[in-house]
Length: 74
Image (cartoon, rainbow, N blue to C red; front, side, top):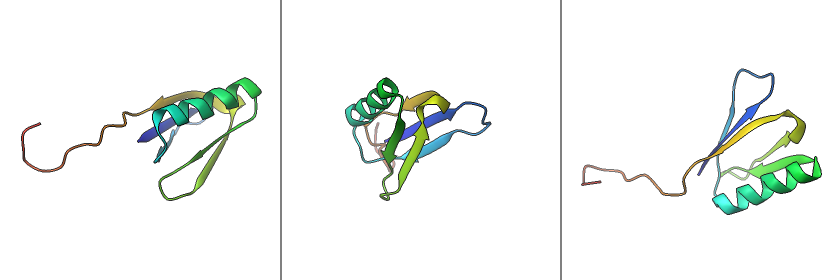
């Protein structure tokens, strides 16, 4: 799933691919925002991304459905 994080005062967004479910990402974001701590997510390669919650502008969580590849019907 693709996760996009908009950071305040930055022109570029943070974009990462994660193996976490939408529910797991939502829970991590909610917990970090409520506690005022750092949001920690893990990408599909195992790298950790840390973002201070004070700097988060927005978070976009992509769908969990995988895109189909090939020439078959949609």
